[in-house]
Image (cartoon, rainbow, N blue to C red; front, side, top):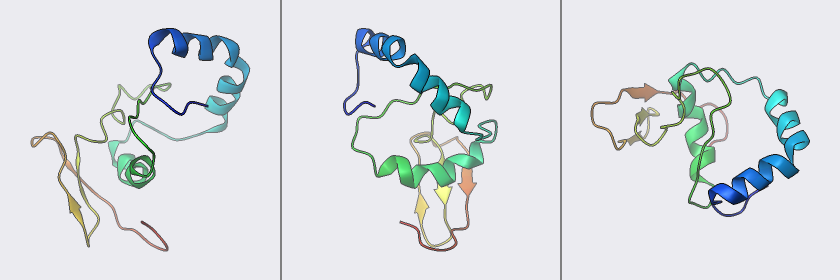
Length: 99
């Protein structure tokens, strides 16, 4: 829906004019965002997007998946260090084709 980072007015306009589509999209996903380990599977997809990127929390996870850039990741063959040295290292085993 968005190709660039919106300002507050543009975000409000989007939420107002596209409310039905946004609601349908949010209700179509069943991701449990109360587990920060899920960021390990989201990170490659997020990294493939042109920046800047803003995430919006629509669940009850206390924002655990809003800070994917802070965690460190261990994919077995690759280790990525996050922006927050005290944040946990999330371990993920990739199977099948992956970036």
